[in-house]
Image (cartoon, rainbow, N blue to C red; front, side, top):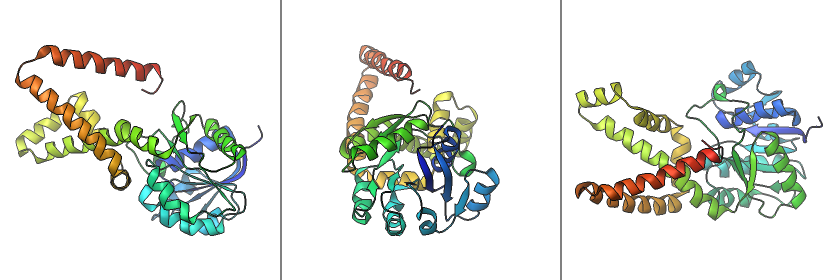
Length: 292
């Protein structure tokens, strides 16, 4: 199989970055993979796991001869990182990211992008609650959507990046930044916010009740704790960077929650059952779409 890129560099070797490295190697999508991360002992761990062919702490050195550079870092770090690496990228290289918000990333990275490189923001809709190089999985992206923002990049450049994305196992879908942020605010950001809140409520309960909530946790509460154990820094940045869309969806959720409160208070079982029937159909459609 002919590699799509000669060399790729992944800056940020957490769950997503490590999984990109493993999936790239599995699909033979690049001749050489370089990893970069300034975190303490990350280089040692990445090398031990044999995730990449070369590891660099300095981002400038890491990206210097790469054909594709992927920033797999929290969205709050994108501006500083892009300012550091763009001057060292070679002409014609592609720069992308994996950030969960897109308006903020486009706004923060855009001023640092030169005409010599191609900027194609993106976002893989995949992940787990685990973090760090050890969390990487070669099949993390299999069957999952990977959202791509073409911006002003030439069609052949976008198509080449999409070939790489599908080579990782993903389903590529083009989208603009505003629409992306509204969709992910509801499908990803709001569920995490609710999960953090519910688990926080449990923490604030009196000691005996809190202990029993943990001891007798049903599957529903366990699912919330899984979401609430995700990377705190990443999710802090997501909510701060996608504040407008999250607040809009949170307001809609609050209105729907008030509707449920009234239905329970006034014993309106028909309204509850109607809602539960409708939401069950959503679950079935998610399974049918292969995104469960």
